[in-house]
Amino acid sequence: MTDTETATARVSQLRGEHRSRQVRWGFIWALTCAVLWGAWYVPGFAIYFEAPFVDMADNFLLAAFVITVLNAIAVLLALFVWIAVLGKTGDYVRTMKRTRISRWYAPAGLAGMLAIFGSIVAIAYVGPAFSAVSALMYPIVGAAVAKLWYNERITKQAAVGIIVIVTGGVFIFTPGLVGEFTGAGTGALLGYVGGFMAIVGWGLEGAIAGRALDVSDPDVGITLRFTAEVAIWVVIAVPIAWALAGDELWSTMAAALSNPAVLLLLVLLGLTFGYCYVAWYKSFPLIGVGRGQAIASLYGPFALVWLTVFTLVTPSWQFIVGGLIAVVGSFILFTEKRDVLEVIRAVPSGRARTIQEHPSSQVR
Image (cartoon, rainbow, N blue to C red; front, top):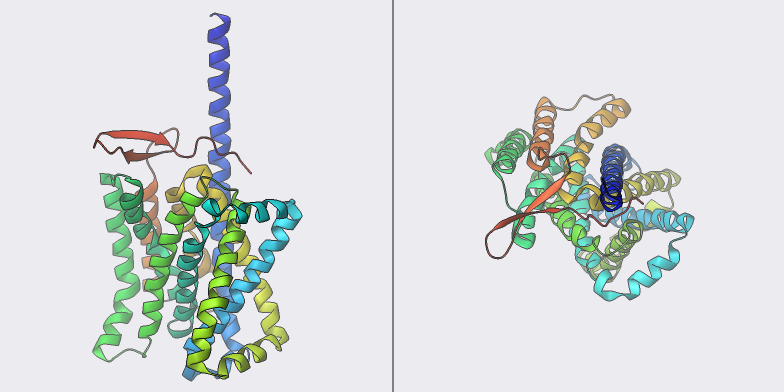
């Protein structure tokens, strides 16, 4: 073997080892996301039992609004601490000034805020178990958007995965919706709408974030995404809510912030959700948005476990069955039988080609 051949073989070996490390860390980050995301539903449920929210059964929509706004601020503060510890505050400012990059995080923040608000509404009107497993169908939206935006082919395996996820969704949604429309329900239709908002919002956010993370650091990117969300809440949503709810909006916020128990729960919300989002965004450049979403979908079973441990209430059987089916469907949808994880995309001419996902990304 010549020196050139030896050098080429060595370079190929190093590239393979580097890619293996990327894949390993991608799976680790995605699994970390699942654990923390599932844990977020515990304080998200418990906060409704604290004043002033415990006395707002006749106005859960306003309660959910206030909780979502405060949750976004708590997450952003946790992320500011995160990037400060990593020494990336300067990168955050520089990336924000580069509008060709940072502009992607505004629609990601909008999609994410709708998903989070929908989830918190679903917790209030239906329950945390439903809220956790209902959003498990978001990979379907991510796959559809990837097809439209990135020309990613939906293979036969992906089609099977979509069918399986929809089957899980039937178990999750159908019993409650049938009850609502036949008059046998509990008046929780808004909760089911919130579940659909979470599906669409997180599916869209994953697709948008994948584009933004091609050209920015995940730690900085997720902080910019929540900066955008908080800005949208403060500049647009809060004035609208003030016009609709009047001074009750401010009295509710003041009462919430004066309750030490609520402040503690907000810290827990900020830590669990902030760092689950960090892990989610870090997984995308390493194993791709699709597979990052698939592994992160394990948050559903983790949430059911966390809720059972802390509330001592076993979730309804249809949530357990539907959640497990949806997780299986997510793995079918996004797992290709390849030694090196790749994404199949179509070129404009209609021919197919295989492109390794983000080969230039590095483990951060």
